[in-house]
Image (cartoon, rainbow, N blue to C red; front, side, top):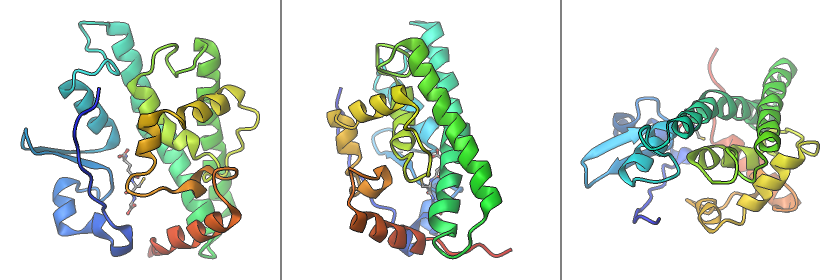
Length: 222
Ligand SMILES: N[C@@H](CCC(=O)N[C@@H](CS)C(=O)NCC(=O)O)C(=O)O
């Protein structure tokens, strides 16, 4: 099912995510956020956005409780795991490897801690895909969980997590990369192939992304 939408770039180079206007939508000063003009509401936090969209669009990606309670709960369980585990662990691994270290602030303790946790999270997905038989996280049908988990799983390279020994995850993310809707999502607001590493990105693209990405974040005051 397709629903019309438009998108707006929140420019990190201008720190727009911390602007007064954006903080009114998300006091946490982070993307993503959604404005539903028709309903006159806003919502931030990727998990809350996905739940809202599934509900208003009546999407089978997240069946309601009274249609299929077990699948509904499975979706919620993995969705909450994504926002509290996979996202933050890979995000912090990216931060310490790709931003802090690039800025000359290498912290081996933090790199090991978040790298190990990120690896453990991706290994959980690999194991889950083995258990369910895939090709999706909950089995044969795609769900909201795949939508939530795919971007970070596909960006394992940028989080410096080696998934060469996670065959199910590797295959799953490889296949999803070609799904038209996922492929389209990866171009918005612009393509960042460096996150996926070789062969998706050239050496030059990776070096250029390293500099540009790190430059967007200032070193926090202690
Ligand atoms: N829990 C949030 C995490 C959002 C998040 O970490 N967003 C990052 C980009 S992926 C961000 O906006 N960073 C900007 C900043 O930290 O200033 C969610 O799932 O939506």
